[in-house]
Length: 521
View 1: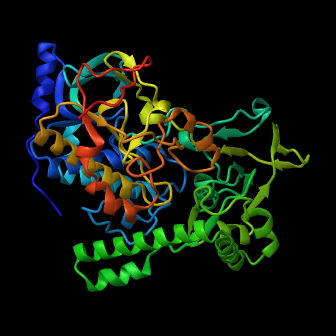
View 2: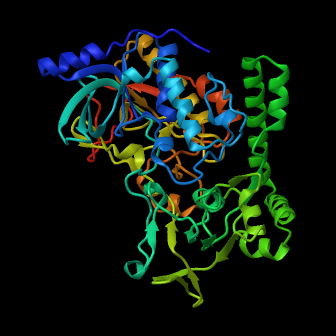
View 3: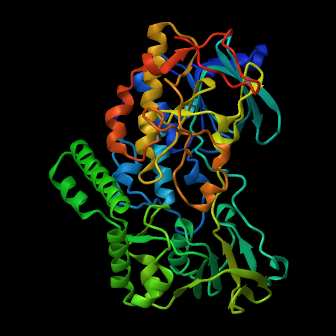
């Protein structure tokens, strides 16, 4: 699929800014050149032709998550027919793809649609202040190489940087680390020259990264001698096929574009139904998942001890393993799993609270990520800092108290891209509505008091540690961030903007902390 794209309206503006000393200005700034940012650019180009935009990327390349993470086996844990873009079919036969293939797919998309020329690399947003009277954002950008700062302006700011802190992972310091004779690494900063061939490895953690690392470090010529997954609490794990055979059959009989939409719809329906099944019938879901694990491992007690969490499926994110590779590595004896607490690191490995020592040459701390709202951007409105935790998110996209601003928040129970693309299209709809109504500045407006609820409804530790610093969701539509693509696809783009968005003027009162209060339409 291809489409015509407008000539780059920002390249000349950027050179003019350099020579004249005036900030570059565009209609929309997108923060982040990952899967979401590139998707947002496509929607802006196709649904808002003539709208000028730039993408600000702090790193030196596009791809976001898929460029940053380089640990062995890094891959998607959502099927690529839904994690990929609806407008660009995923042609690889694998349903769960490796990180390098996903990165190639994002690069191919950016090249095909002329998006990369809009990206400003090594440009980290370190300041964002909205001037209501001028109806524009002034962004302070830091060159991540030189440290030099410059400014640029825009009419609308759209954060597609996700909600993880890519500079500072959750990396607890284990007592005795300095005494360990081997190497300690974190997956987020995987050393390119790490040699673990023939060595004993302990992976601390049980999330998506850990379950990916364990079987991956046992493959190829440089394979580890043995890998132990050391977990404090088990995680729900589901074995899934590496290839979607039904998708293969569909693609064999239907034209590519039609097949892509049919397979995508099939996978959306299945993932939505399975999530609802887990939430509504948790006891049955537990039995199903433990039964699947027992069938592969052949050891009911092993499953009871190490793969049966105390919480229900989807209280935390479910981990998918292609072809049951983790289970098969354990069954073959190349890997094992230990459920216990770390006491400390000792020269020969990891000592548990039980007193047992797991000998290791390499310790991998797959202890999770840290949440960071909007890529670390702290918005100011007319010079006043907005207290994000006191604001509400509208339609999973815009936020009270911050005019002309949107954020991309993906699903936790399905492919991120499904929700992201709805938000991209909603942003385009809002921009068109503003233009049609003659509004330069708008912000969401609640139609009464809202009952505050956490933005992400997950019990996972990485969520609970940081969610208090995020804006909140409400108790009713369109203030709820629902984890249901089917309902969102029916309602999000049909939202009555006249009822839930309000124009804002410089005279709109603000609270003591600078948060905008409801403006009259």
